[in-house]
Each structure stands twice: as structure tokens, then as C-alpha cells.
Amino acid sequence: MFTTHETIGFVGVGRMGANMARRLKDFGFPISAVYDRQASVAAALANELGCQAAVDPAAVAQASQTVITVVTDDAAMDQIFAVDTPASLLTHAKGRLFINCATVSPSIHREVEQRVTALGGASLEACMASSITQARQGTLYLMCAGRRMAFERAKPMLETLGQTVRYVGASGTAAEVKALVNMVMNCNTAALAEGLGLGQALGLDLTMLREVFSQTGANSRVLETDGEDMQQRAHDCYFSAAHAAKDSGIAIAMGRAAGLTLPVAEAALAQYQRLIASGKGELDKSAIAELTFKDRLAG
Image 1 (cartoon, rainbow, N blue to C red):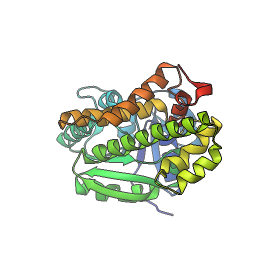
Image 2: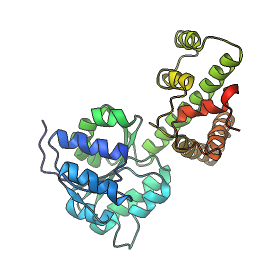
Image 3: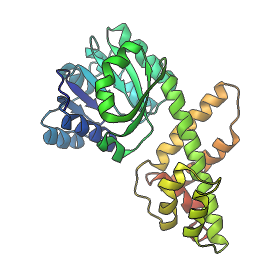
Image 4: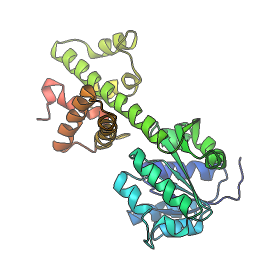
């Protein structure tokens, strides 16, 4: 068991953040404070871990030497690192290490690093290509970017959380890589849903079809994680359709900035947006199959 005197706080303790905090606590890392926009969620976890339920992000930074953030989008990230705001993490940035795990735009990660370093702190991206179960088991795939010194300081914590911890470059780079990972994953998910939906319409045995896919060029990690769920309509959320749409949107915006059009990614995004419009955005991304099976079209 690893023991450290570096106290760790969390901002954003939904299912991912909470499981990361539990994992670190199990391995002897002192959890000092947790904050979430849903105060009841933070209070319950604080009671479980024996730490402070902070009233705002600033209180987390005040109580911690390292702060791990797991928030939903660009606006949330900008808010918790807001300039000249008493509730902001920046209020106590000096000497702190901020490990930012959210899938947000690369420009936001770069801006946060600039704000933090200007106040004497350090910032690191640690983008995650895994889900809730892996967070609890410590088998996340972590893509890290920022200053090397920040990466080395964060390593003991990251290696407890991740099976693979990979440094990929300067600030913003991990966010770029993560956006591409999710863009490709989302395209694969949409294509698999169409393949299984067409298979059903043709009267094929879908279990047989999935087995054939797994042994041929149609194989993918998404087939392994989502194929049976699509067939069985089991869409308990591990990675929501709404988050899939957000991440594909980030990648498409990156493409436009680079002078590229991404028609396949745009088509996949349109499918996720249809799913969200039908009220199913909080289901798992596998629910995109609700748009491709004839007997369950979501309109």
C-alpha cells in the first residue's frame, strides 16, 4: 500500500470521480475534501471516505495539495477555474497540483494551465479512455499532457488509478488524442448499430452475426462492449449518448479548425443528436441502436 503526505481533493464526484477517490483511499492516499454541484452527492461520499464535504471548489484547494477534477464540459471547467472568483480553485492555486480528467476542448486545458501557472501552481491533463468499473479497479487508460514536472509529481496517484499511464506531450495534446479516441469509438458504435439493425431486418440470428463480426474485419472493441447490449436493449449507462455527442462535437470542431471535414464523424454525431432529441441522451451510447432496429425506431 502506498502512503503519501500529499493530500488529495476532488471536484466532481459523480460515478467516475467517486470511484477514483475510493480507489486512492483504498491505497493509502489521504482524501481531504470533495465537492460536487449536487451537494448531497458530495456529502454522501465525504461521509463514506471520512473527509470534508467542501462548500465550493476553493475550499477543496485550500484543504488539499493535489486536486483532481472530473467535470462535464468546457463551461464547467472554465467555472471551477474562473479568474477573480472567490469560489474558484484559483483562489488557492499556489503550490497546488491540479489533475484535470475531463474530456473538454484542448483550448480549455491550455487556458487552465496558463491561469494556474501564473499563480504558482501546476496543471496536468489526465484524460481517461475507460469507464466507471475501471475507475474503481484502477485499470484506467490515462493520456497525460502538460509540463513534465507536473507529470512526475502526479505519477504515484496516476499509477494507482491507471493500468496504462501515457505521457503524450504539451498541454492540450491529451485532450486532442482523447477527442479522436472518442470520435472513432462513436463512429464504430453507430456503424455497429446499423449492422446489427440491418441483420435483424434481414432475419439473421444476431448472436451468430456478432460471432462472425468478432472473427472478421468487422471486429472492434465496441463490438465487445456494446454488441450484446444493443441486441438485448440493455442500455444501463457507462458512457452516455449525451457525452458521446459532446466529444464527437469537440473532434469535429478540431477538424474544422484544421481545415478538414469529417463526414463520417458528422453522420455519427447526427445520430446521437437524434437520440438526445428523442429523450434518450442519458442512456448508454449503445442506445444508438434504438435508431436502427426496425421494431424500435425512436423517431
